[in-house]
Amino acid sequence: MTDGARSGCALVTGASRGIGAAIARALAGDGWPVGVLYRSGADAAERVVAEITRGGGRALSIQADVADPGAPERAFGAVESHFQAPVLALVNNAGINRDDLAPSLDDERWNEVIETDLNGAFRFTRRALKGMLRARNGRIVNIASIVGLRANPGQANYAAAKAGLIAMTRTVAVEVARRGITVNAIAPGWIETEMTAGIAGELLAQVPARRAGTPGEVAAAVRFLASEEAAYITGAVLSVDGGLGA
Image (cartoon, rainbow, N blue to C red):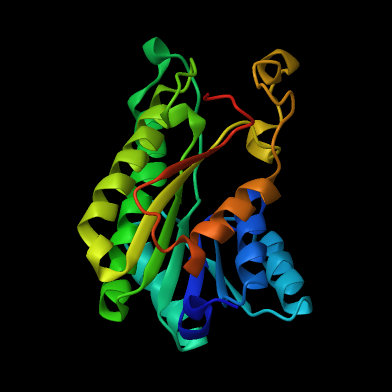
């Protein structure tokens, strides 16, 4: 159990399935009481909570849409009240994609992705910093994407959001570094999730490792960045991509 886990709790957005669920389980394994935030899929979120509880951990499911400006206050209020501790580890994992080539990508799909993947992450980060600055301790990990570093046709909105998330990560990291708070990003490549279920074999052939990654491999990176051992790592972008971005 980390020092942070003894004095605070963790909040993971988009945690009812896939990468988010794996992250919630990994942090719970390190002793963090974990808020499992979900937009839809209450049953799936409760299954994650049940898994954590069976393993001896503590977890709470919280329903909220990160695109709602009021979501951070409600989510932080619920998890901090339940665990009687401040959120000292935030993982901004929630994200959506609405793919299309730029000439036919309409404003609605552009704005929907930016609002969820970038604006939502900023609002949750801003809210998390209130408690972290008071505690002079905190870990924020933003789940970006290799698409924020490397072009992928048909994903102008998703790429813009993830590239913006990376830039936000670096800037906020510099702003709060002297307060004992680290802010880092992880850029997954092709990971086996519902979002990537339709990826064609020829795309995976571009990955030097010749396979998709697993949610657990992303979660392991988050687990490290949330630990005391990673206290001197901030403003970093860690690619978990099988060499795709090399």
